[in-house]
Amino acid sequence: MPQLPVVPDGVDTTPVPAVPPVIIASAARPGGMVGMLAVLGLIAVTLARAFGGPSWLYLVAAAAAAALIASGYSQINARLRNTSFILFGIAALTLPLARAPAAALERGIFIAALLTSVTCSVMLIARCAMQSHRIGFIGAGLRERQGGRRYLSFTLASQFFSGILGLAGANLMFVMAAPSTESHSETRTATVVAVGRGFAAASCWSPVFGNMAILLALYPTLHWIEVFPVGLALGQVTIVVGALMNRAAAADAAPSVADAGPLTSMMTLLRSSLPLLISLLGLLGLIMATSWLLHIVISAAIVLLAPFVSLLFHAATGRAGRRWADGVAGLGRAMENFGALASEALLFMAAGCAGSVLADAIPASWIAAIGAALRGHAFLGLAFLIAAIILTALAGVHPVLSAVFLASSLPPQVLALPPITHMAAILAGWGLSANMTPFSVISLTASRYAGIGPTEISFGRNWRFALTNALVVCAVLTAFSWLLRGG
Image 1 (tube, one colour):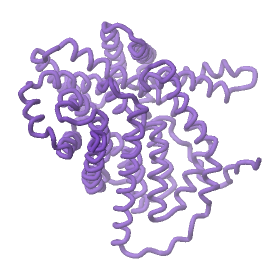
Image 2 (cartoon, rainbow, N blue to C red):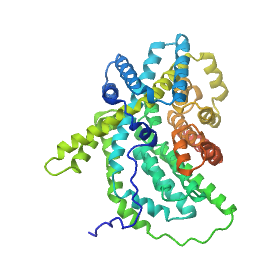
Image 3 (tube, helix red, strand yellow):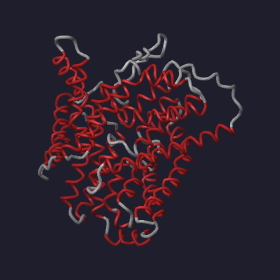
């Protein structure tokens, strides 16, 4: 069997951050032991609920989240604090109007606990994957492509790494697309945009994204394995639409110098990255198998397996004779970053509770009126869901709030939509909104790597992409709904 090619000398091997920039920014000032123990408490609650734990555990989750937020409160961005307290205020004011206030609050807290648990678990896995020495070689090979091939290569690669590693995978791709040794240019900016669009495609199907975790919790009749093919198809639709739009834009642009052709063949890149790709795909398979065997949601399987993956990785890369000790030490070092999740915990708790309570407090007559107007018009119903998420995101509302609100207040039966198409529309709206709004983490990160403002890299570069894809996705899901009903 031929040997896999090694990373050539001279190839960019710039160290890749082990965690997303939003986490890196606060990793230097972690919340300490209290924050780490609080996150472990949230993980314990999430797993207990996955295995049928009692509903009173929401009190434990609330206490753990409060401890985490308090441990890192001084490091939370002032704007995020203000936004979160406004959401808490809205939840408190509307709680007396809710039909089942205790149940609504409980649901919001459990959603926040699940999101925080999945986020920290993906961090553990991402820290392992990003230590691969092959990352620099892959990035250099992808940057050799030009024009449409470069756009498509980075979009597809971003979809894969983001789909397995979440936001950390997108950050990895931003480093590949815009290394610090490369000057700012239109090509660099276009490549960064391509990475963001790959992230949007992954959000339609990936089990590691918070949107999938939330919606699977709110759609008890659906399982990830059922949603996956539909979400994957939608993701590829957005990629194809983006590639066609990029090709049309390139045709309208001024002629450029002919490409010299790739210096590294795609086969060489694939062979060199094969161990990393197999490891990540194997991990995804293990997560799916665990979910199936234990009869738990896939988000809980991620939370359950992540510490073991980190332990085994650090043990395998540890010193001979001290592998297990090094494995435990490596896992401990990775968990030290858990205290830096105070910002995420505050946002998830505020948005989860506000979205759940608002959905329970909205008058039944309003829901009936919306349902009466949209029922029987699948395209309009789907367009309403997608547009609501995108427009609220542009106003600065986090998609967590929008998704929880829409999934809870306008369930599939109100709009007369099959549950899977209803959920797919919210997934697509979430992904498109992440690229459209300058307030999302992905847009802020892209702005830094591209060297242009958040509004320009998000709305300026993606409004046509988002609008076109929203219409195409609505048409595709309308046809799919028609097929599910038997024509």
